[in-house]
Image (cartoon, rainbow, N blue to C red; front, side, top):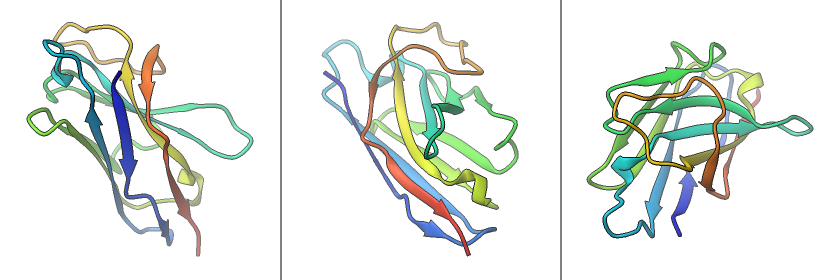
Length: 132
């Protein structure tokens, strides 16, 4: 079973920056992380799960929600099984619990979704609060 652990969430002022990280472990032999699309999703209090960004298997293709495009950058290091979400110019509406999530199925190399898909693993989340 894949285990995902997010970190890096914090309280930050509007306009500030944060970098979230997600470490993956427990991957099955023969199925390294680079077989799968990875995503960041978030959930604010009282709201549903919102897709933030997805990255393809080798990290060359990334899609972002319109609400974060130009401010967030999603990268992956498949050698270290670590993902990062660099968040700049943060806004109060970015406040949420952020989760990294693993696609439920193996994906072709150039596939990257632009919305929520089926996930089979998700971390416990890290809280981001943007407030003055």
